[in-house]
Length: 146
Image (cartoon, rainbow, N blue to C red):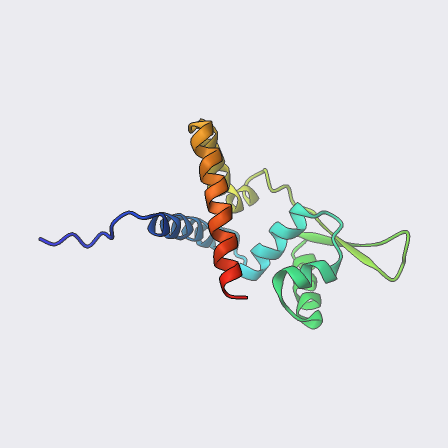
């Protein structure tokens, strides 16, 4: 019987990692009842408290109207809040109202948290070498298309 499993290469290993991470995110989003865009926006806001809608729009690559609709939806679900910037009242700041470290919202980070635990348990030299290699290969791949 032929083995249908591709030979393990760095590219295959990275695709398996991405597939596993994406599957975990699909499961998390389904359990939370949120879309991919909502999850990406929420994680960005959690990581960048007090962010401006413009920064969120640029990160997600959507229009101004799209980010307004997205923020309205997240505010309506009480996941984020809009605060007027005290230094410039024309500016809104977006802050998460959920605790990403607590259930059920921790589901969005569970795979990454578990991966970080595995990295911490691995050989530090191997982790450092792998990090340097991955950064260099990613930069080369990105640079090849410019």
